[in-house]
Amino acid sequence: MSLTSAYQHKLAEKLTILNDRGQGVLIRMYNIKKTCSDPKSKPPFLLEKSMESCLKYINKKFPNIDVRSSTQHLGPVHREKAEIIRFLTNYYQSFVDVMEFR
Image (cartoon, rainbow, N blue to C red; front, side):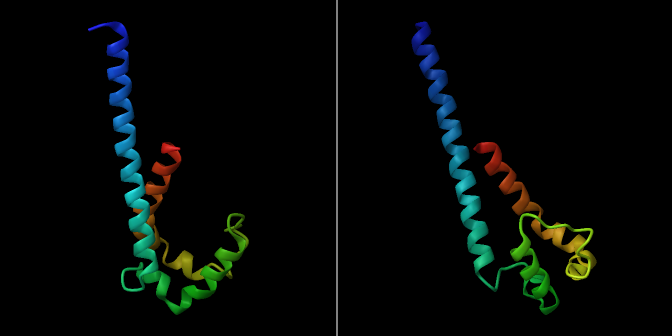
């Protein structure tokens, strides 16, 4: 096998792996979108009445949210912090994969 064909083989293998990873990332993003748009499968804390004002505040201020000074707006978030982290960890990891893939 010549040097050029070995290089082309390695490049083709790397591109195949990259393509598979890209498809996996896209599938996860689609599943997140589908899960969050369906009220039946949406994380339960997003449907609570006590969280509505928090979610509006976060949507309005995102990405510049000062968590320390806005405790009156984010009180319910602080109380349910462990549950929120537990539910959103997989979503966070998927978004990290998107940033790494990019």
